[in-house]
Image (tube, rainbow, N blue to C red; front, side, top):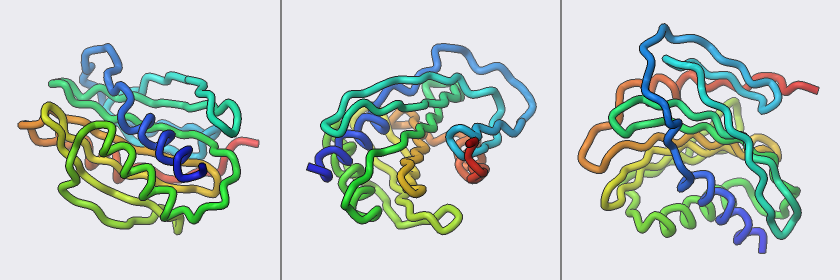
Length: 176
């Protein structure tokens, strides 16, 4: 049941829409902090924030999505969700979520490695489907799932901004 919930949540976060619906406005890179979700990042434009609620077997969860449109059908989405307590190791949860996401996109993994963010376990992978490719970094920070997802058209490289945004993410003290 927990593997299923983890798979569904990560799948939903990874496969969800990445379009911010706006054209990229050239701006200076700035730092944006989100203490309610415990992270900060640097970006060429202010992320568009969208909050959603999702019903799960464990109850309603609130998902915060931060969208950065990079133009040319490329974007970055950072999602933060506080998961209900699960009796499942973080690495197993991350693997289950990755498997569900890749299956739902009918994609194949092209690279994968374990990573950490301030000592918190994570997983980085790239996958490719017919029309889109994705790069993801997914972290478990206590009970919070923090997902960074970049998408680009299948035949195009990821914009240089993707690595800069991903590498800029820092954990900050959550708001009380």
